[in-house]
Image (tube, rainbow, N blue to C red; front, side):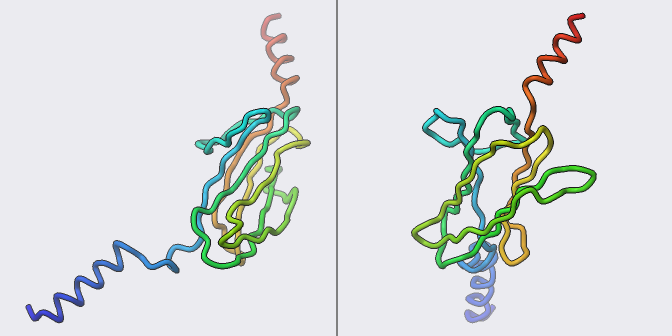
Length: 143
């Protein structure tokens, strides 16, 4: 095999293993904390939060090379997914984290979505529960 073909094949193989910085788009990670905790914890699965408590969340991008406008959409599951809150946030190389809170929500299933230019970058589903409903169910079971 000629050496230029070998170099070309090696270049193509390298590009598939190590995509350039423009490939793959923005991606980050959700984390939550319940005050008075000092640290955020990564989210795994579908977390559940009591309606009576405030939970803080962050979405952190490990690498941002230029300014982006990110849509932050909170949706609730009714018969279909319904927008509860929509806002936009700017990220750049110096500000790579989006902050928010989960509080004052009714019992139900929710989805928090990060999007840019109509494309979903990431999402986190979570459940808000009412502690009183759980206590009432426990009392009913005891009877």
